[in-house]
Length: 462
Image (tube, rainbow, N blue to C red; front, side, top):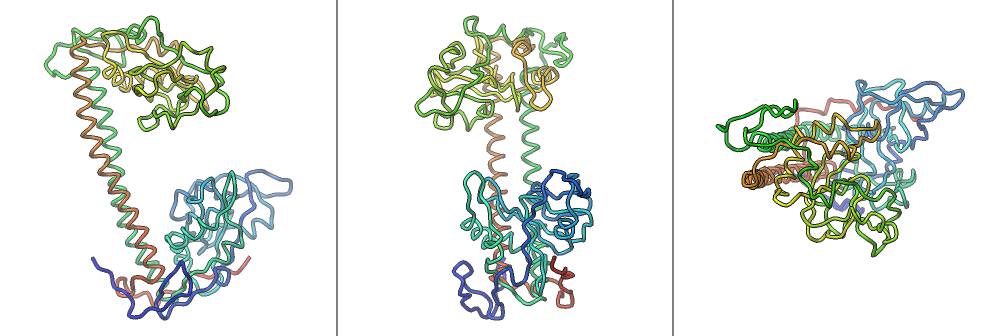
């Protein structure tokens, strides 16, 4: 579908903007909005009143800040409450973050929110004259402002935008009725795109469920639906094929290389040291030499027994428990930390099959129920060694592994297609917003009559 353009354009005089419709003007943000960086943090101070705090994640993950959201309990001074309570028409943005691309993420405030105060790491952009708050929000969503703010951000451990940088950014301003039309058009069209994205995200979740169900069925029931079954004697396993054994995991590993974790205190990352796997590294895309931290030979030497060999299995036992991967050839001689267990399959045990067995729900349930720790869950090596594994004959292990590899390839392809669709839809969304707020498309004929709609109530400056 080709979207209409305005009849005539002129040079904006702003490199970042290019051409604008001839009847639009440009001005600095401070001439139409107050920019109010918040100094309200989570701490309580004497003489302050209780408030609800709109924080970084409330803005980062939501298009709008609404009354039904769960806000953090905090406190603020009377002056802070007067200045930073959220009002209808406000746009709340992230003013600092760990990376520049997370700066100036925006959420719109459609209604007054008495008692809800803008929190630290955020700023309010509050319309004062002749601008629609919904249009301001879309300006911050546009590639035009996002790329501009990325270049203006500065800092070391965290990067941020100064009040001056925000206030002096140049924005395009169409007439009031067109601001309303653009806001209405983008609300409608982005909702359609968001619905398509949600469908693809739902598909990805269903594919993950399908993958897990396929693995769990194959490694506990086998591939033959007509095979005789027997009670495994393990409640969470149920019945297994009659000729299978059910044994502790430690009986499937090399006697000389028992299941164990590795280095307790690996120290800081050093150049040209011994590669080490942490819990967060147990993912397919992370098992690469160039992505791993390294420790000194002196720290690693006492843990030589935990060194890895190709086709070992590494299993995350702290934090995100239950991730498992095969060790590739390039990581021979690398070591592990206390967040990872090494499982070395014994001779005659298929590493590919055992990997899938460790990823299955019935095996994971055993370990999850016994996981330790409140803030950071952990699996005890004692429990991992004794996890009960349904074991088919070697030839059947190979067939199950081959079947699951083929099924995984199919699911991977479907997932990649869905992820590509999401990427394209997000790019389309961003391009549409940018085109609308910079006048590259004329939406006046694409929405119901908005000329009679007033600009959102203009709050008085704080």
